[in-house]
Length: 184
Image (cartoon, rainbow, N blue to C red; front, side, top):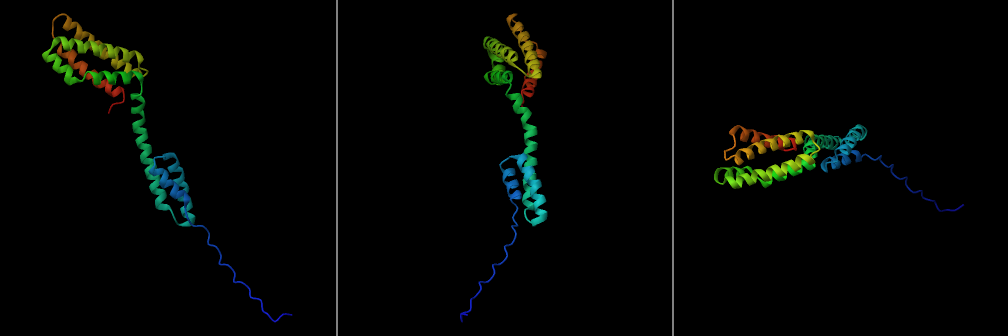
C-alpha cells in the first residue's frame, strides 16, 4: 500500500432549479410590439409559471393588459380601415379633397360658372366612385349625393340659384359619405 493518501475532491454544490419566467418576458415583449394574440397566450402561460417560480407575475399582467389594449384598438380601427380601402370610397374621398367645401362655397357666392364646373366635376367623380363601390351603404350615400348635385346643376342651368334645402341635403349627404367610408 502506498503511504500517500488520496484526497477526494469536494462534491459540487447542487444546481438550483431554473427560476426565471420566460413566458412572462415574452408576454411583455409581444404586448409592447402589439402582437396581441401572442401577448395574451404568453401572459396566461406566464401567470401559470409565476405560481411555480414566484417570478414574472407583474410582467405577465402588463403583457396581458397591453395585448387587450391593442386588441381593443384593432377592433375599433379595423372596420374604419376596411371601409376606407373600398375603391368607391377612395374615389369619393378624392372628390371631396379635389372640391373642398371652402372652394365650392366661395365659387357659389362669387362665380356661378366656376360653381357649375365644380358641381359637374363632383358629379362625374361621385358617379364613378359609386359605380366602383363595393360597400352598399357607401354606394347608396354616393348615389344620394349624385341626385343632389344633379338637382343643383339643373337649377343653375335654368338660371336659378340651387334650392337651399337641396344644398343642405347635399352637405348632409357628404357627411354620410365620410361616415360610410370609414371617417371618424
